[in-house]
Length: 306
Image 1 (tube, rainbow, N blue to C red):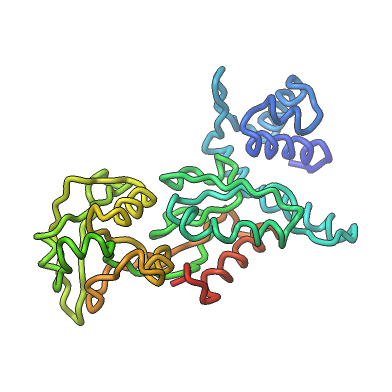
Image 2 (image 1 turned 90 degrees about the vertical axis):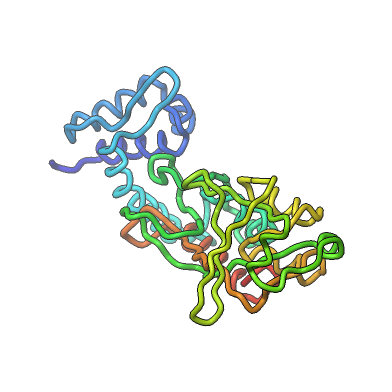
């Protein structure tokens, strides 16, 4: 298939629809009519011989072929933008809207205290930080990058490991004054433990401890089951019970004496934090800048890092 300027124009329309979430908003962003947007998509679908969007009266989603195409062309379009910015002598190529997919724990406990510094450092960035329980379809939903805990999915996404953090067992001083401290993991059966629901299984997450070469699974029971880390921390601070949580987000609370770390000789599970982005090419400047910034504050020795 020969290349011409109309192909690039139609591909730009595709990208605008993905980023805005609808044909109407894409038309507004590109100063085109809705019918012009539809015609551009139709020409693109005809030229490559596949349907790119599933369209209903309420939603627009990429087909599998559309996701594949967008995953390949989005870094190329970003690269063109970076090249234009650099060639035109712009003060920085780190500009435009940056859509980031994160979980609640990273957003509230780790990223939020640093947002002001990031926005000050990059004044031409418009940051859209969206909290999701699941990673979802990064390409289909128009995200530039995701920062997530856990093993990266088997996909075309590029994964860069940013941090390894372990879990810690904590309780408030008020709880410990009433009920005492567990000396070994097996003592937890006699305590109130706040359980966290797994987003994968919907069941309470299992607690497991390691000492040397010995690994001990611990069965806990509780009258409180939560599915969100902010509620878990809040309940623990209020003295409801003992909680297990990623160390990277509660070191400040432990240092300030609001929480007390328990069972320190026993190691909990480890979790890896990854940056994920839909490109097998060099990521755009705004994505590189965000990854570098997150990596920096995670390792600069601040209270929130691990």
